[in-house]
Image (cartoon, rainbow, N blue to C red):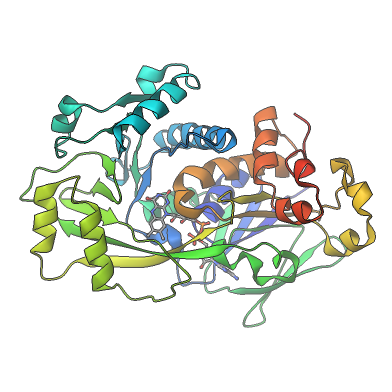
Length: 400
Ligand SMILES: Cc1cc2nc3c(=O)[nH]c(=O)nc-3n(C[C@H](O)[C@H](O)[C@H](O)COP(=O)(O)OP(=O)(O)OC[C@H]3O[C@@H](n4cnc5c(N)ncnc54)[C@H](O)[C@@H]3O)c2cc1C
């Protein structure tokens, strides 16, 4: 039987899902509302990839570690041009005591810790041309990728068709087909659909309960030819990322419910200030520039900062079912053949490829134990279940 799927949205979520599905035999059509792929959050000139851990959130750290390990290994073997990605390391500047605590916590989780991370010292700071006196952690496998180059590469497969200017307005279900209508009344049909439209997730009747907050972010970049710059990603209050010869990128601002599309001087100033402790000469160099390039886009984040990846409930069936019955995950009224992958916040280039891989395994009914754990963690229905006092079962949709 021919396997067809429509994917809404051509950012990193939609493009990576298309890639995994096409490679497992699906015919994929990506429908993108804009005039090109990677025009939303995934359209920044560069994305940093490094793990961010927290001392008090074991489940988040597990998800982060799995995503980071998977995505970096996968990216290395994709065949991207060497000018479009580097995994030379990433430094996270942290307060000294916190860095030590984090390092000893991570020693218990990571088998070959020395290969994965080290506390930074003056030798490392000097080696990477970073201001002296800082503390933090060097993640050896961290790095960066060119988002547009990655997304373009992912959808090159002959089983993937991408159609732009197709803003989907509604999703309806007929007997065994999903019917998608665009704003200008074009219709697409398919047995399977995946929604990867980031902050617009709740635009459809089926998904209106899946709320994501939007956080405006501005990045800036500048030529740094005359300076000795870090060759790796460095994150402090802001980040500094090398890319393509002499250009360095820095950012990013973070503001909720701010919908101004323009690059703002005051945000450029904020970004410059955020890299002061990383590289003083570059900071001064930025301050002396007449104009600095920038770009604005939005991150889409759920309240608990976990993405929404998996299936959702059939609203009609849900109305008919008693809460008592919902206490058992095998009674959940899942919608058939409709999938979600959105809400990747500030970490789309670490999380989305891994989540797309897991979602592909769900669609192909080929889940490993680790995949099930991940889907328990990212269950899009967790808020609805929590409201019904079924928080525990929300994270146990699969037995592991
Ligand atoms: C300033 C800034 C800096 C960032 N830096 C990093 C970083 O360094 N590293 C990192 O990992 N992440 C970073 N992020 C986050 C990252 O960009 C996002 O997590 C990621 O791009 C989300 O990918 P996505 O595919 O879910 O969404 P998007 O890339 O936003 O893609 C969604 C697509 O869906 C389309 N769409 C929406 N509605 C419809 C519809 N109805 N019909 C058809 N198409 C539709 C949109 O046009 C869009 O193309 C940053 C974000 C910002 C804002």
